[in-house]
Length: 113
Image (cartoon, rainbow, N blue to C red):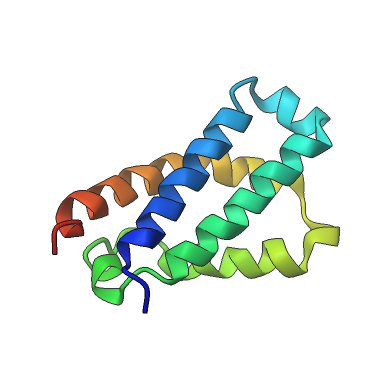
C-alpha cells in the first residue's frame, strides 16, 4: 500500500490545476473543450485518490460525502459521452471549495503519523 499522504498530494495537485485552468471563469470553461477535458481529467484523478484515502481519515470528516465523490470518478470515466458540463461546473463551484478545506484539515491532522 502506498503512503496515504501521496493521495493527499494528488488531491491537492488536482484541485490546484482545476483552479488554474478555471482562472478565466465560467464562460471560458463552457467555451473551451481543452479546458473541459483538463478539468474533467483532474476531477477523475482526484476522485480516484479520494477513494484511496484511509477510512479513518474520512471518518474524521463525516460531513463530506466520500462515497459520492469516489463514485463520481466512475461517471467521469465511463459516462463521458453523456457527461453534462453544467453538472461538472456545479460540482466545481459548489463542492470543490469545501473538499479543498477538508483535505487541508486532513493534511494537518494526519500528515505526521
